[in-house]
Length: 391
Image 1 (spheres, rainbow, N blue to C red):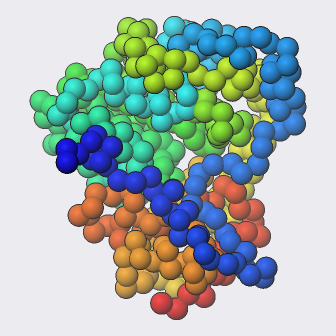
Image 2: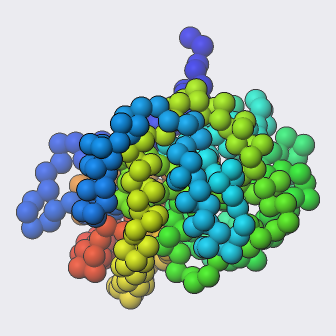
């Protein structure tokens, strides 16, 4: 049997982890703590839900095909927000709206790569990036991170070949959470520009960055669109995960190529989700600021409570946005530990092996904790259960 492109990659990790819950009963005094997925579990605020209902009831075009690259008002609105957030000067024609940020990545790769080309991914990597590259016939070249879970520019330089088409970064990072320093991101931009390749920066979690001011200066570089490709998601900011609204920001010429891809896989992004994103841009700035404050408070709770785990041999390797990335102290692979945690501690999280190449030993000692849906009491309960483990 000839193997298909889908057979070239692994099963979706979050779906695999959910299967560990089958036939497991969680007693009332120890309910499941689900820290496996970086997605809000609460619906959008009521005012946004009302705006979506109004669009569904009063806008005929909310139920029709729209422009492939997205609603013009939303493209212009996101451009304005980018200009304010990054001290930039983008235009609506630099913005394409996509059916989620994963689709934005897939579209970017479609404009960049041919069969057998290469893209450099820091490891631990975001597994959906790796999966798409596999299915596109593009080689993922791992760039193991160094101190502070940060990738190194010189190490990346050594990996560039005549097949390299891009370097893809995620900041704040998934899975490690760390926020890449602006100088580091600029260093990668200079490296990519010098070699005539693209720098893709996935900033899905930028609304929860702990820093004030622009997180980097890439949009301020002369001719930024010749090298830099920005990816964004409205899903986390406005709790719109089920509506799949993301964005690809690049040169108009690249977006003209991306339009070919987008037209064949979705025709256009969902209209009601786009109306929701636009309403959010225009009305929810202060609400998102409050959401950010809450996430930062939960991040602080992760730090403040960690000594109880440190005393048991755990290490906090990375922290930020929605994620805490930890090294466990047990003499077993995280691929075995993570399912065991469901049974013995009522905790569902993802093993580090899901974020590294199969032959990489690092992931065997690592776990990703997606803490954004835990309040301070939930984080304390998580720590109590983890510290009580005797494996």
